[in-house]
Structures are given as C-alpha cells and as structure tokens.
Length: 100
Length: 274
Image (cartoon, rainbow over all chains, first blue to last red; front, side, top):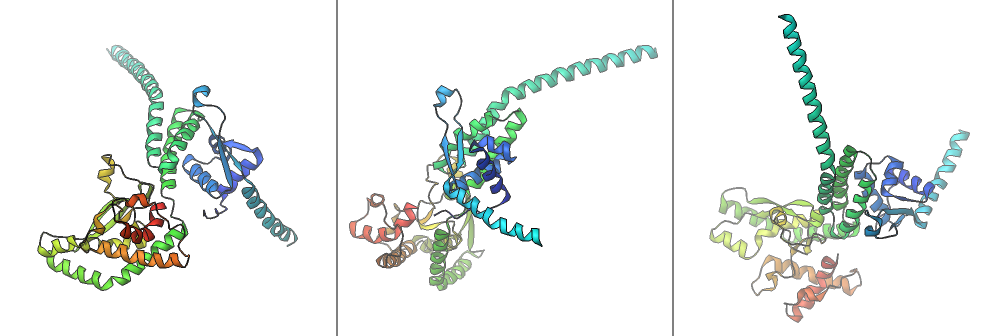
C-alpha cells in the first residue's frame, strides 16, 4: 500500500490548481504552479499512487491529433477528502488566531 | 596617413560586425534546427532511467509537455528537468513493509553468521595479505547503482575453497540489511554489462540467489544454506498466515526437482513477485 503523501507547499499548489480548474495536463499544472518538470512529475506520480489523483489520456489517437497525447490529471474523492481535512484543521486554528 | 588608418580600422570593424552578425544568425538557426533533436535525445535518456512500467506513459506525456513549452532554451531546460524527475521516480524508496522485512532478514543472517564472517575476514586477510574485502558496483532496482562487497578470493587453495562454497558473497548480507538486494531475485549485474545491452529485469529487486542459479546443486554452499534457512522461516510464517503474497510463479523453477521446488517456493514467492 502506498504511504500517504506529506502535505508540502508543492503538494498544496498542485492540489489547489486542480481543485480550481478541475482537470489539467502536466504542462498546464507546471504553468499554473510554476513547478519545474523535475519536481512536478515525481509529485504527480506520488499523489496518483496514493489515490489522491487520477489521470487519463486525452481522447483521440496521436496519429489523428498529429502530436503526442496529453495526460490529464484530476483530484479523486480521496484527494478531496484529504484537502477537506486540511481545511477543517486549519479553520479552527485560524479562528483561535483571530481571537488571540 | 592618419585618416587612412582610421578608415582601414573602421572598415575592419564593420567587416567584423558583419561576420559576427552572420555567424550569430547561422548559429541561432542551427541551434533552432537542433533543438527538437536535442530535447528528443534528452527525453529518451530520461525515459530509459525509468522503471519499465512507466516508460511508455512518460515518453508520450513528456513529449507532449515539451510541445507546449515556448522557446527553445526553455524546452531544453524542461527536458533536463525530466532527467531529474526520472532519477527521483526510479529511486523511490521501497515500501516500508518490504524495507523492514529486508532489514530483519539481513540482521538475522548477519547475527547467525557473525562468527563465520569474522573467521572468514581473518582467514582472507591472512591468505591475501591485503584488505580482505573488495567493493564492486552493481545495478539494482530501477537502475539504481549501489556498492556491493565481497571477500577477496585469491588463486590459493583457500581462495578457491571460499569461492567454491560461495563464502565470497557473505558480505552481501549487509546489502540485504541496507535494502539494496533481497534473498531471491535476478542477479545484480555490473553497470558495464547493462550499458553493453545485457538484458536484465530492473523492475525487480536483485537477489543474492537467482532462481536459475546452481544453488540447488548437491555441493553445499553458503547460498544454499541461506536459501534453505530462509525457506524454513518463511514456511513457518506461512503456516501462521503471516507471509503476505508468498505464492511464487513456479514456472521460474522449471528445472528444479519437484520436492526442492516446494521448499524453495515457500521462500521465494514474495521476492520474485514484488
């Protein structure tokens, strides 16, 4: 079983981009998060192995498209739950800060 | 006279500027024309570093990503990033359970053979009159290189004895402890052989004992001993339903006798199926 990914700032950037856009290709995520390819793809694979992301090839064959297919990533239910947990844990902490 | 010299200098500077401009344009055109080939070559070498199961996917995905990157220099920088990505993906650590299993296994055999290891260390040092351990580089899981250690086996009678009994491989138990290799699995080869195109399954953790090796020959060797002890314990674990997925593909043992197959299979399953 894959271990649960740590919620680093890069993980949050990727999840944030995918939550706000729905489904993005690797190059679109790189553009949106400013992550270098060397950082982005191991991270995407890790999140996919953990079940937080799902990916699919774009429809059509490379011969028909005239170029290699893009691979699109989206957040799964498990990923959504992980994000919700983070938000749920953060909100009370922020509340305490407000009242401090 | 001074006017003539100034004129000649001006002319030379003008000619040089034209030449530099033309050359720069030629170089820029050349670089532009070569960029797709360079990026393709970098992606190909990055893909080659990946585990087999990811190669097809990332070859297409990374080529499509590069097409979306504007600018030739950015394309090359992005392609170089794939090399780093491939390195990170291929050196992903073993799952915790497997790592712990190897650590326990390695420690068990090291403790079991500690007197023998110390004796061999002293024996080889006396026999060879030099440092008794040699270090060799091997290619492991997903192409990761690691250092493996062996006892130096000389041409003397003692050297031949330790080689015949496979005692020379005993320090590899520390590689099991470190998680570089396991007990059973394909032989870890030197990088020179891999570069020469010798086919080896890099998607499996290499092992001290390969299924097709001579370890079931009648002559006793440390390999046989280790394999048999491991099989015994794993059979015990299996009896208590503690061995996950310990059912091997018995076709790997086609050349072995059926009773021996059953003993070895008990221990080899997890190693070979992982």
